Length: 592
Image (cartoon, rainbow, N blue to C red; front, side, top):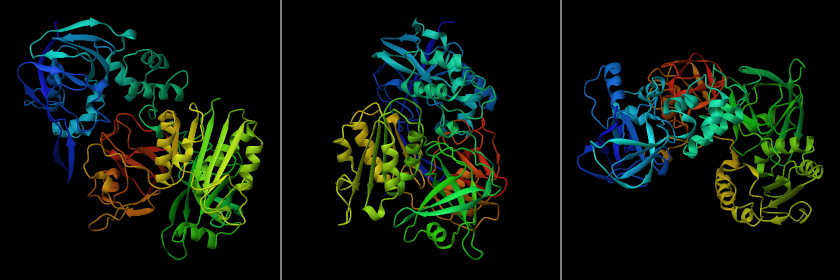
């Protein structure tokens, strides 16, 4: 069968109302007549609203097939589907996803194209189709469509024959590659094949590399979450479900505003080993009948110890920190969830740069402990910023650890040193640990950098590290509060207020606790999912498909259980949930 270009569809991004919000999207395409010039980034008259997920050189042209149109008309009971309905630029006869391979090249008219990746499905195709499940259905039924890169610019026109010029190496079809990332049952050999295809887009190459690094010789046929889709899926399963009592065995002041608690199993057994950089979540019970305060604290002690150490900063109006300092005594018990988190020291021989400000030292201190314990020969940089010596936690401890390493260097900066602080001994220079200072340090560009501190500090220092030549993928950050939201295409999303109880009458359902946001609210059946409840509370969330396929919303479930509707295409990692399609089955605590 000769493949044919049936329709050319274009459309510029526009504002579309959706669930009380405004989406800026280019998914609405219209069919155009006559020849159209195809350029490196776009077809003339076409554009994309969300360039993080669509468009660019690797995704210049989206292709969808008439055969899939026929399938969906029958599957969905629809007879009104017209070219461009799936947001595609080229509607074609032929070129099925189970035959077209990544790296195949095709000539249409005067232009030459190369297949780079399957379509990454998001909620906007469902918006365009009037079918919220559409993103998941495209994957589940193996009909994603695919993107083309423009090798040679030129004019194309509906009715032209599509001529295959060359075949991609490895003969990996669009359908097969889509299943490798989104579905279970694939093998290590398939991932390695994908990585041998030069035409595969950088984004998909990164996902395949992550899958390869995280999985063993056989990628499980009963996948519990794909590392290529979500960083949350790369975390090991929690050491225990829910919360358990831990006993406070030691309390240690670290600075004027920071103190540490040593925690042991209430039954005296060794606690499960944590990874360097992970955190635990604890319930802090105020006096009286007030509900517990749920807070997460990084583990600051040496990983692999039988006990855990957390270090708490007491802020002037910090309810949990003040409660712990005022009322916690040795022998008391705290309810704690198992260590979690993906901000962890990676193995390797390349240099390590540990940067922190204030109490942000806690997770990177655990990494420093690990390097010292292993007598690592890696080049290690310890860079820390504090106000002065009275606000410099772990000063002596870090000096001892650095001294134990054969190739380590340290620089501590005090923004307001006192007369008691010794220049050249306690601190290297007066001033903030800033982006400008980082630029002057000549840090190794092959290093893995780990940053923890205020958001503005991490943003500016990350930019400085990348400017100095570090790959953005090697710069890892951790924040103590809510993470940055990801709400693709939503206008005005960055202006959300602080998390709060949802408007309207209070719910009567199970208690939902957003641990990072410090918010407890009862479930309300007016919401369809935990994602919708979080949005109603202005809790920062990350999502894309909203129907259980992309895993962007995957996060740790600290305690409780959920029910799914609809069921996700693939389950999340053990101990995690997808909030876009789940509801609480009882009281739950979310790492959100």
